[in-house]
Image (cartoon, rainbow, N blue to C red; front, side, top):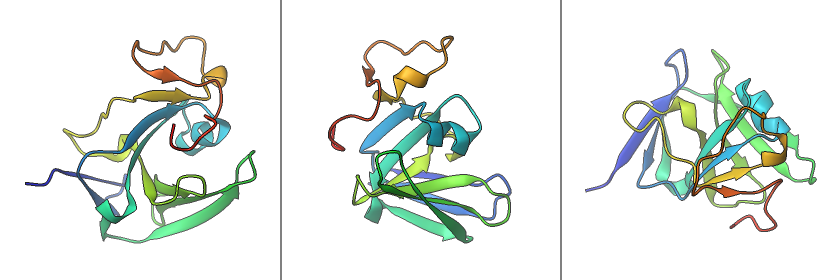
Length: 142
């Protein structure tokens, strides 16, 4: 039996389903994640691309170039603007889903790593057992 995780945007126009277990769960305080979420950090839940399907609605895509010169295709609901998903040049074959957009009970996947810890707020404590990187790890597979 397969495990499914569903979620969607604030207005309900876009719905998605991810199959199986995430391949990576990261918390991040880079500038892009902070601005994408409007918060101190973003939680990114990565599944293999073929295990993510969109059940309804349509997305608008915005491409940006990171500080490292690589593209990030961010996709959001055309109606309400909720940032839902992205693909990254440096992580081919995977799709990131915004951790806060999952329905209960999947809504809080535990991060296994924290990237861009050098720009995290001083008041935020990283739990024991989470790998910490000051910036982007040297390898996308780290």
